[in-house]
Image (cartoon, rainbow, N blue to C red; front, side, top):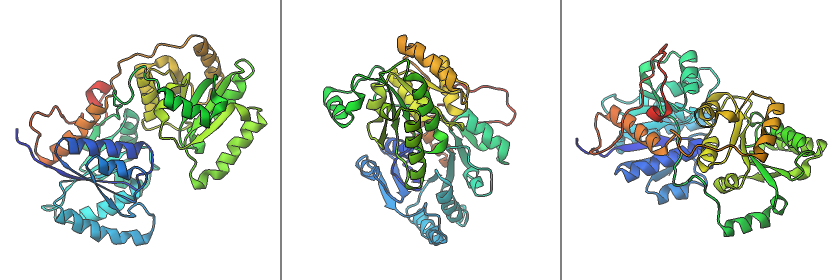
Length: 398
């Protein structure tokens, strides 16, 4: 077994917030820890200082800007890949994916890096989205996404690698509670939440993420649980300001405007979930994975979620009693009344490990590069075969 130092470039629109962005940083940090060179290309954002602090390089290019002018980056990227002798080009988003693919496909196959793409969601089915299936290896982050890709795109199943997202057990330790300093700062900022039964919906503010259902749930609970208080944790992009107004108007209409707090973007979602009685995932469209659900469960906090997509997969594996029929507020209401009286016990162990996800990602890179790291426990994720009846457990493919 010989050590080969890889140079890996990950490409995405920006590094502001979100699951894709956090996953990019996790892979970047792991690559550096394993002795490889990690480079990220994006338009920048609040996560860049941490990325660089952890040892990665960042190129601030407007590679996600949806404009014909962005096409000038094709040649620039092609030159950069050759100049830096990049081994792996890992694409995580569609528009940057096209820039990367055009640069990559125009290179001499003997000189170009290997191309990896990750399908992070059930993208609209069209030629624009198809770029995310053009990788020499295509990472799919849940069984739902694997099935979606195989159903809608003519991709060879042997190019797919199922690689579940994972949680760092040190960061999201079972039973974790924030310290007194954090609590004091929290209650100073949000005094209305003191001595309340807190239920939390951590999700960016957009229509399909379920905030309207959450407000309806609070309205049903409030007469029976006067101390109930809902936290909607997530930012509303500028183009979603009208929907935010709609949410506030709906809360006022139902008489629960004082029972709901919109926190906006928060860097302390872990702490907020840790002080919550229950965390919810009420996305009306199936989530590709649903990272905050897993993080809450890892903390030992009960989670309810609609029984579809990646969230449904997680709850089925960890806390099946938290599964809800999609859109059924009445069931959520009845179950939460029970849980507020007697919370369910969340299992301390689960199969969705961050380390397994990182090992599998590096193994995919090494599989393409034809090398292996001495002493590494890395292994390729399972090959996905069309029509296979074989089930892949999260522990085998996380």
